[in-house]
Length: 333
Ligand code: FAD
Image (cartoon, rainbow, N blue to C red; front, side, top):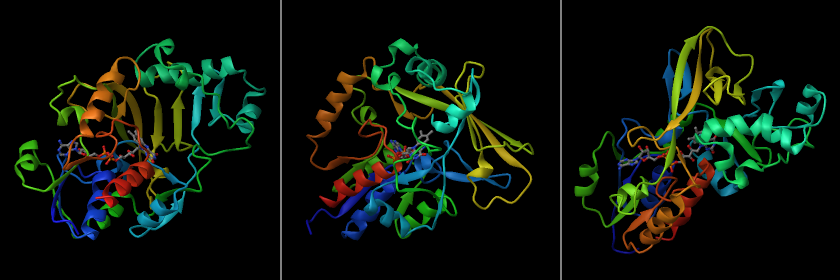
C-alpha cells in the first residue's frame, strides 16, 4: 500500500461511484463531492406520480464484459430487456433497428441513399443541430449491419441486455453503502478539501479554467407528461421534421414494477449546450478536436489527479465502458 491515503472524488455518477468502491477496497479513505442534489449522474431514476422514470433518458444496461457485469451484479438483480424502438418516418411507422422485419413492414428493401434519407437525415440534423453535410461521414454513412437480421434489438451484439430490477438509483445507493458523499456541493467544497489523490469526473475544460477554450456539447431537454394514455410501444423515434423531439417514450415499459393506470410519457429535445444545462454529448466534429487533444495531453502530466468518465475524458461512454475505464484506472493506483 502506498502512503497516499485520502482520495476525493469529484462527481457521483457511475464513474465516480465505481472509482470509490475500487479505492475503498484498496484501503483508501474516499469522499465523493457531487454538485447535483442526487447521486448517480445521468443514470439517476426517480418516482414521478407512481411511475419510475429515467430522469435523463432511458438507460438500458448492455455489455459483453463479464467483469463489469459480475461487479454490478453484487448490487442488483437484473431483468432481461429488449430495446426495440419504432421509428416515425415518411414511410410510416417502422421497426428499428432496420431489419428484415422493417423491410416486411415497408414492403421492400431500402437503398443506402434511402436509408440515409428516411432514417438518418432528419434525425441526425435534429440531434446535432447542424445540416447533414456538416456531420462527419463516419456518422452519416453508417449502413445498419442489422439488415439481414430478423428482429434485432438495438444492442444486438451484447450478451447482457437488461435493467436493474428495482432501478439504477437503488443499485447505486447500494454501491455507495459506507461511502461518504456530499451532495449539492460547490467547487469550493471539493477544492478546499485536502486529499492526496483526486479522481475527477467533471468536465475537463472546466478543470483547466477553459484555458484552451470551451469544448462543445449537445444538451437535451425533457418534457415529461403524466397521462393515462399509455403508448403502444416503449419508444418512438422521430425520424422526420414533423416534431422537434428526437424520441418519445413511455416510462411504464422501463419501470419493471409498474402497476397503475397512469404513466409518464417523455419527449426528448436536443438543444444547444449553454454552460448552464447539462453537457450530454461531446461534439467530435467541427473545431473541437484540437482543444480537446490539448486538454487530454495536459491531463496526462498530472501526478495526483486521475481523469475518469465521459466528461473528464471527453468521450461518449456507455455505462459498461465508464465502469470498465474507472476499474482500470483505479486498479493501477
Ligand atoms: P455522469 O453520469 O455525467 O456523472 C458525472 C457526475 O459528475 C454528474 O453527477 C455531475 O453532476 C458531476 N459533476 C460534474 N462536474 C462536477 C463538479 N465540478 N463538482 C461536483 N460534481 C460534478 N449508457 C448505456 O450503457 N445505455 C444506455 O441506454 C444509455 N442511454 C443514455 C441516454 C442518454 C440520453 C445519455 C446522455 C447517456 C446514455 N448512456 C447510456 C450513457 C450513460 O449515461 C453514461 O455511461 C454514464 O452516465 C457515465 O457516467 P459518468 O459518471 O462518467 O458521467
